[in-house]
Length: 423
Image 1 (cartoon, rainbow, N blue to C red):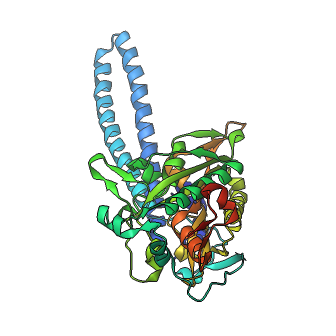
Image 2: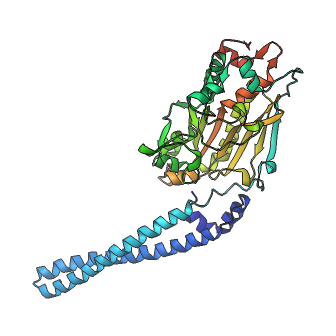
Image 3: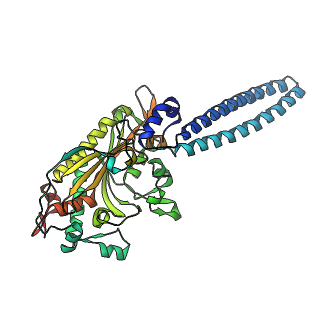
């Protein structure tokens, strides 16, 4: 969430940056600033009223001690009137603060000025490509046919037990899942991240803190009876570890990695781009999260980007990195890189990771702050990235490594799978 001081001191910059996200409710900024002017005036009046009541209370005591009861009684009447005025002013202040808050959460994070303008994914900017494109044999199959042929993932059984988008992983398919999770976690730990095993449900305050509420209610599964939400990503519980926390600057950066199931209700559509593993309602992912000093968060973002790239290189998957345009970014992000792997049998690029800097947007919602050696306090910057999400990685691994007599496992994964081929 953007702060009122930022909007007040940097109004034109905020308008310029928000325009990159095609945000057209600019009048909200003026409304917020006017409401804050009203809040300031009410706060000043309330402070003056309370100061007067305190002064009168002291004077009343002195008058009673001096035997001037009539004068004291008159002042008490005045004090009663002032207390009622203060009560009304407090109600006004609460209403103004709530209204400001409600309007602030309608404004997305202001994107970094390097974010390209655009409205859809076709306007994203390719910033890097790596890896060799595989050459498949003539009878190569898409992954949804391969998983049936080798009986490693069962969508029909998942549909029977739960519903569409909840597959069962079987035999070497299950072992491949476990191998990828352990590989990604070990790589994160080697890069200095502390492993976290988070809960899979969060409360409303946590979903609000990272920006899922009130923007993405329809995309989350809710346990309504307990007012809890199944997590769409481990980012939510892990980042919220630091909600209402002040971190010493000397303890930065904070680096956490977490494996979790992820749950997303997002509506599917027809076509091969959502077929098979391309889009699921439940999937596995390893997430990396960092809390950084504002002066170093973009340096941190580049380090996280390199970490994700290193995973794809070790898996021998051809990939590209795209900088998302304003129209394709999330509500909370200031800058996002997407990683896409090439799926040879489908002949299309599949998104497997997003690495984002949220600047102070989440930290302001969560009241996550940094204290420096001089005792000065400021909002932290939060970052996260998928490192990595499994379904489309599995899809690309199966398709790109298929041969006429089986599916080869990348060398880096073989110590984790315990086998070199699915056949």
